Length: 160
Image (cartoon, rainbow, N blue to C red; front, side, top):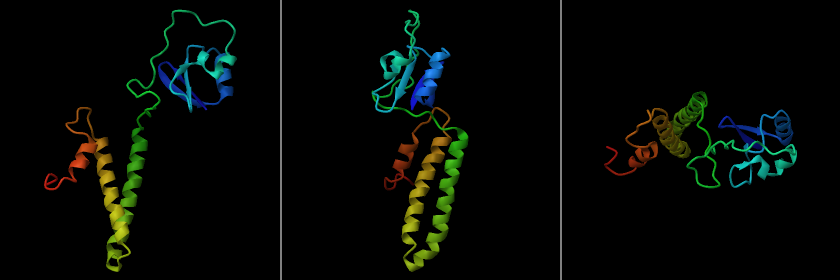
């Protein structure tokens, strides 16, 4: 599976057949940045194994390549695009559901000692939910990050 850049936006994953058709339609060319698994970073299509699908004539000179998608990312790392609000909400909803189930089952079962792992798991989920809530409500100029905020809760007397 390959990824490519189109209008400075990442597109894909697509298979090699789709890449062939995009080259034939002239939607992408030799200077289009592409990436696949096990590549150290984004490379122009004409410097990859996909170059064999390009037409013989070279692309016109003077057309700059689009900037890489992962500006500021360490070499060899991929920064995933942010999740959509709907996906974030569904994820938080599922975590909350599991937290509620573990608390509802764990507290009564603590009397029998078998509920203690459920309560411990619910406490861990509580901190995960708190982190996710803090991350979602950021307005772009936070005084502290969600990780620092949750981390400070574990400092004795500081969390009061």
